[in-house]
Image (cartoon, rainbow, N blue to C red; front, side):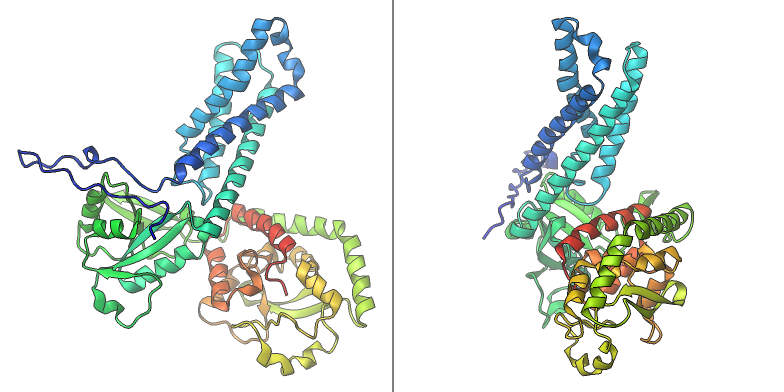
Length: 503
């Protein structure tokens, strides 16, 4: 069955009498995946409403700033026309000029939000310049309130629209791009694994075109059909795709990739190049062209500097404030634990921290006192792989302990570790210190302080395999940023409330 967003490539136009082919753009126009068109139209309406609402909020708060425009009906009509029509239209123009409606930035990543913020700065500067040049008497507070409110409303609108888009992609597979992967089988499968980890990205591989022939896939089970020796455009038309992803070193011959791009001109097929740089975030990758050769420069991870200092300061301040505010919660949890089982309120276990240093992590006790003695009898029931031991219905956990684990309240005492500088609010989870030396890629987790929450926790927690958990932790180490930490903290709230993967 053909995908709902598929397209058809028109056959090439007949060769003209003089033998010179027509330009690709003069042939049939694009007929591609069109999910972004209604999505963009809805965004335009929502953005217009958001900016008009921001104007209304500003006027309501600063009525004295508009008093002079209400003396006559003409002044009031002109004022409301500017406020609720021209100014929102101006916002849309500036947003469009900053490519905030470009389909390449919609639905994934932070570029969309950065462009909204950049547009807000442009509007603020433009209004200030116009007021100064025309000597218009405007309230600075009213203008500032309108711009800030509009930016906040726009970001909220974009977040909600993205949530709806991601939900549609996850549940129906619609509003997505269908991809043909071109390259060797290992390279294509690596890209397949990467893009299918996140259905919200809207990239659905539907076929693999091998550059090294069918023999490379003989006897290997593949998730999508495999082709070789086919015309790329004909294959794209056959499988109903709208995107081609060139994987790794697929174009070994000089100029082959450029000729493929020429071949796709006017067809509406997007061309993506997926280099062998997996799990490296965009801010660390820069393109530096030299004599027509685009070189990818990969920056080192930022594990020092002002941002790192700001992270440490945020950790200490947040931990101190959190311990003071949560003191009543600590008291109630401690009482519940003592009523459930005799023994200490807190559980302290040696863990491996920054650069291999060992520390004792603080947690509320959730197991009976003899839990360690009963561990040997339960080892064969372990439901996870790697260095962790997890059982969904662990008999060593008392009832109140199950609630504490499901709600993540048992982790709150780790604010003490954060205040002491042994842990961070965000980072890889600390691993037990009795598992011996950490070899291979796992050692790289120790370049940063372990965290109370992290990318692993907001991506599935105990439901993830050990390899996937390590991959996420290494991704965090390599691509850390203060904004990324704040994003993970925000996502943690939803994960905790949903109690997903907590046991």
